[in-house]
Image (cartoon, rainbow over all chains, first blue to last red; front, side, top):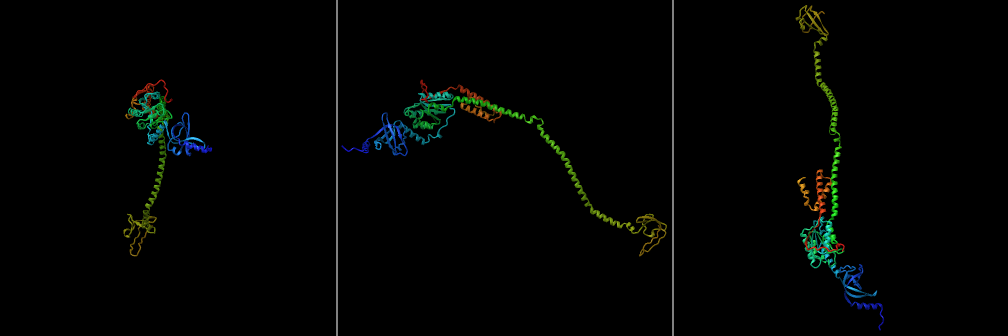
Amino acid sequence: MSEPLSVSQALSLAKGSLEKLSATIVGEISEYSDKPGYKAVYFTITDKSAALPCMMWRSAFDKLEIALKQGTLVEVSGFFSVYIAKGRMNFSAQTMRLAGEGDLRLKVAQLARKLEAEGLMSPARKLPLPEMPGRIAVVTSPRGKAIHDVMRTLRRRFPLAEVQVVGVPVEGEAAPKALIEGIEVAQRAQSDVILLVRGGGSYEDLMPFNDEALARAIAASRVPIVTGIGHEPDNSIADMVGSYRASTPTAAAEHVVPDIRDLKVKLEEQSRSLSAALSNRVGRMDSILASIRSRALFADPLFMVGGYLQNLEQSAQRLFVAVPNALRSDIHRVEMLRGRLARVASTLFSPQQSKLQLLAAQLESLSPLAVLARGYSIAYDAKGHVVDSVSTIDLGDVLDVRVSDGEYHCRVETKNQIDRVGSDLETDADE
Amino acid sequence: MSEEHKAVTGTELEELTFKQASEELEAIVRELEGNQLELEESLIRYERGVALMRMLQSRLQGAQQKVSVLLGQIEPESDDSIDTSLS
């Protein structure tokens, strides 16, 4: 008998044996721990009656692009092992892939990533939906509830639209091609919007709606496509590339049409607005008229001429004041002119005047009267001739003698002839 | 009404789609509410609006769903008429 083993030794022994035991196992993930920073991810796979704790090194796991999720069916390959510290058996997975539906989902996810990278899901590509479609094509199975749900919904909400039924198989291998053809038929029939719908089913049932060619046909459609495929939370590729994704056929039908009840309500509102707007318009016109009517122009007959009248009165007033004013200033000016004229006149005549005075003085000095003033006298004969010689008179002649301040008569009594040289004339005269 | 104007809004009612008619009605209501129109023009628009409204109402009242089958053959609905939205 050998020596008893230590616990560590025993577990090491078991670990060595177990690790020779490799296997590929399919199971559903029941619990998992995928914490960043840990060197490995830990999960348990189960079937109906057994559970197997598993681990996978993170370096290997990260390459897989698999998100661990409860319920996911996976296929793992690796070997059994023992975690010595706890004495627990586990399975060390070296590879892992999704199994069954999980596998399908992975493939769909990869296609989705590819199409998204191509821009087929870009919001900019999505066509706007018509507000009130006149023709609605429904591409779906002619059997089953979906088509009836859609027709019932459209009838209830918007019976004005024509429903174009494009019945095609939606399951099986031929479905994608048939769906593509259905979309083409709908476009040719000049639908305003296409409903691409089917009722709920298993993930596998919905696979035709994850077809790449169908996705490309949807993305290329000239008519907006609204999808209503299966039910939440399933999301097919068709949902992603369509113009709008509704969760069910009924929801899709509801989304593409307005509700006739809303339309009726709106129409009633419009009817009221229409009447209100017109009576408003007329009412406003009326109040404008009223305000015009109440203006002074119509209230006061003199209003229109009043202004002119007032102006006229003011003008007259100003005229009354202005005329005497103007006259006054004219008079003043005339007087000024007269003054100036007078002054000018005096200066005009003064040279002549002084000349005249001079002449007068000269004249006066020459006047015989001046000589008379010095004591001389002038004798005139009866005939008025100046007696300047004794020869012209006879004795007894009466002469008039002029002196400075008067004259007197005298009679010649004597007369003598005097030599003119060196002698004065002597005349004897009586008074 | 000018010829040009007639060309814009004078389309025969029967020729209009429901959408066209309701858009025109909406525009008329807005115009009237905008209060920028001459009174005469307001009355003309109002009349047109009323005609459009009557036409729309009668279409809504009398609407019958028209179905045309382009492909396939619709099978009658089975007895239970549960919406797939609930399934």
